[in-house]
Image (tube, helix red, strand yellow):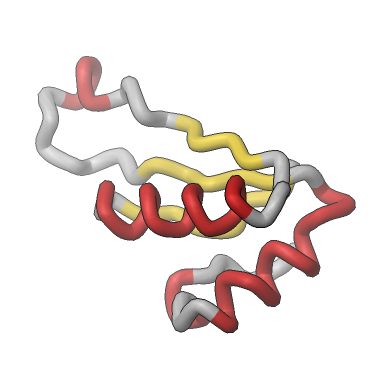
Length: 75
């Protein structure tokens, strides 16, 4: 899995996840339940992951949707 976005903004993550899922990408949002451990202060960002083979296409889709500034640098 490749990390595309790391953020605390649930709207951003939901939008990106929805775009990717609707386009047929295998998407996984992780660290969503960490708020229980951190006390809901937003200290631990959530991560949006895709399958490694789909990373380039997913990045392209998110860039086209105006989310280029939110993308993590590729490894």
